[in-house]
Length: 455
Image 1 (tube, helix red, strand yellow):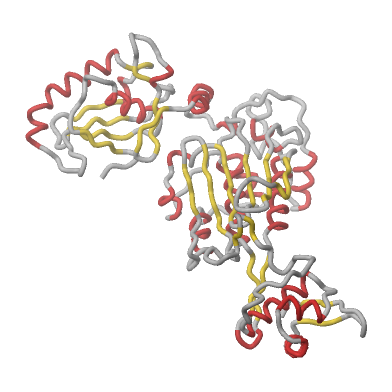
Image 2 (image 1 turned 180 degrees about the vertical axis):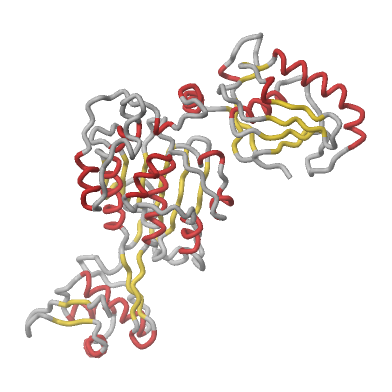
């Protein structure tokens, strides 16, 4: 079966360069195999192989000598007597590789393997291959800065009672030069994180917009705080006034997705991490694809590759992350039973993750003209469901949410809002008091409702 490491071909086309593209893509990625004499559905045609194998061997051997740049002779082996006919390609160590056009190196002929596809390398990917030797991690490469300060991260380490040792944390290399990890942890970190909150399901009207800067650790702290601030809690009441509070987004899932950005993003690009809150979802963008062509299915099974080992080590010491490689699996576990599952869009230059709001009613008329009706927080207390009586449990849930958001709300406002009689509201309030769910700290003329969240 075709995958990121295996490509099926029935024959070699000499009319175009499509076959050379496949070879180049494996050289520029993690290596792989091309199986010749195989149909699209995976059937091996032995007659085709016996008829063509000498021709194939001669064609490929000629190509290996003069059709690629840099030289690929050390990385490709041909198995002409096997069924299927196999070309085994190792990952090259002098990337980027291309097939030649008119005996010249041509940037337009650089390809990479992405999942089971061969795609043209982007300018950023070519730049990364040119700058980064295969044996060197980008976060450990030297930074062109001498005067770096670490005030924020040092205070963070001190709070955790951990010694801040620049050498042990790989902030200084063997030549005594600051590394890229040091730059990103420093107060002079040039990268930013973009945060936005939109009014509706579309990115038209901003409710909040911030560029987070400073040390990577500061950006993480600030981003987690803003996400928690915008991750609202809704109260649901079940039978016998049993109350359950549900966050719009599972806290552990949101944290996992955020920290994955900082652990596994491609730091060789100047693109920004972006976190965008919509009324029905969160979208998180991380620069760079999954490291080493890791697939989503592999990540869900617990496979993990660390693109930025030194950065991950710092985040582990500060207890931001664990080393169990089970985060993606837990995200899907958190959404088990929910009709809108998390979505991952893994592209060559970025990863986009969507988490859906568990308290958003995707089937109702909650969306009107693409704007969400914000229940229970409208200062005008405009009545909803005027023509429909709520069930008792639904009404109790609304009362609790109203009291928590409008502590001074009057009985008359509750009556108008819920479209019931004052005596019904009084009975409901008494029931909630008896259950210990609410208290009224006001006097005979004013209300000051307190919802007991511990109940």
